[in-house]
Structures are given as structure tokens and as C-alpha cells.
Image (cartoon, rainbow, N blue to C red; front, side, top):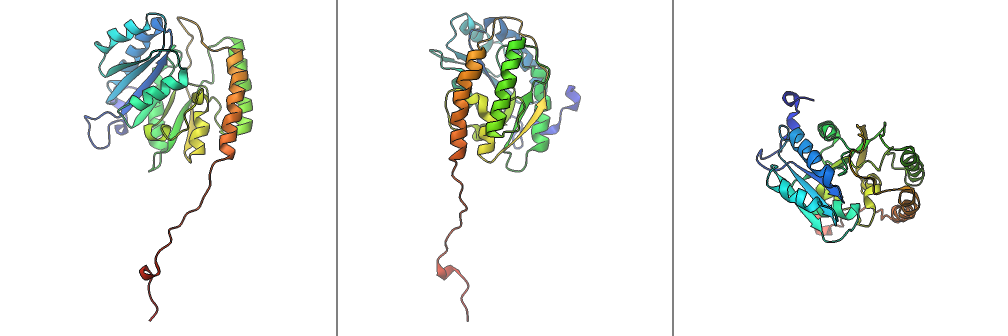
Length: 267
């Protein structure tokens, strides 16, 4: 998508000077990937939409802090937050969304494998499919993944088990690239590893989820923080918890009782 074809919906509805989009990027020990990815995001979004980029350093022990500090003075709308100790990816996303100033949120992983060039496509999908209430999550689908076979297999198994228990109809809930409203996210129950179940949580709260095929790039620097153990066994325990939450959702139909004096009287 080129700059001259950017949909008009990308601009804020009421004030073109206000922020329309907050991009949240959680990182842990990604010093070699931060600068390249942050500049890619800025280059792609700057012509399209008023935005901010929020990196959340989740207790990194490498030079991530200094890299983020340098970027705060060189990139337009760049912000950096830091956890003093490692709290996990879900906590980092939660911190970023809480601090965000725009009504619409984009999340993507900090390792550079999610392609920022897909953000305009997801934005276009969001605006073309969201109803008046806007309760829609657009989730990336890494149909052709650039990962080693063990990671691909473990993710497929986890996705199959999750889909059978939660019926979230999302082929790749683990993809970090997602778009949703800030207010919808803040209505989700907050818990460790919640980022793996965001589509199911959106559906639980009465929203909708649409998956869009996205690019997936090889990791250039560093190594993955996830393996078979935390992707399957720990994830399965979380899955049972989310299934428990879904089964105990409160369903009510409500009417307001009016005083008889407010009703029409018979002659």
C-alpha cells in the first residue's frame, strides 16, 4: 500500500492533531532488534496516521535500556517504559496499553518477526469491518511461519487444543500483531499469559474477531524466549483457567421497572 492510497479512515474522526493509534511493543533483551523495528514502524506509519510508539522493557539485562533512551530523542512520538524486574509479556502489554493515549491499539512482538508493513492492512480491515460500537479485534495469522520446526509444531498443537476448548475460531492466537480498542482491552481480566487468549477474551465480552494473513520474518538477532515447555504445558494450565472463566460468565437479560405513574392511564 502506498502513501497516496491510504484510506481516509486512518485519520482521527474529530481532531486531525490528536493521536489515533498507539503501537505497543514489549521487549526483553532485544537490544539488537529494537532500533531497526522502531524505525520501520515509524517510517510506515508516519505518512498514514497520527500515532505513538510505546516500547515496554520487561526487565532486560542487556543494553535495551540505553537503546530505548537514545530513541526517545530521535523518533517522533516514541515513548519507553520499563519494568524494574521481569514480569512477562502479558504484563508488558498491559503496562503499554494502560499508558497509551490513543483509542486504538496495535501490538506486535519486539523480535522483529512481525512485519510492520502489515499494520496498514490490519487498520484497513478494522475500519471496514468494525460496526458502530467498534468492538472488533483484528488478529494476524502467520500462515507461512519462519520458525524452526519444533516451534511450529508446538504452536499448531497448542492452537488445536485451544480452539477445541474455547471455540475462538482464531487460527493463530499467538501472533503478536493485533489491533483492538484500548477500552475493550481494559475490560479483559488481567492475568499472566493473557496475551495468548486475547481473541477468546474479546469474544467472551461480546466482541468479534477477524483474522488476516500476515507476513512472518526470520529472527535476525537474539533467540526466542519461548520453548516447548512454556508453550504447551504452562499454556495448557492457562487454557483451563480461561475455559473456567468462560463457563462462569454472567448472562442476564435486563429491563428497567417503571413506576406505574409513568405509564399511560386508562380513562
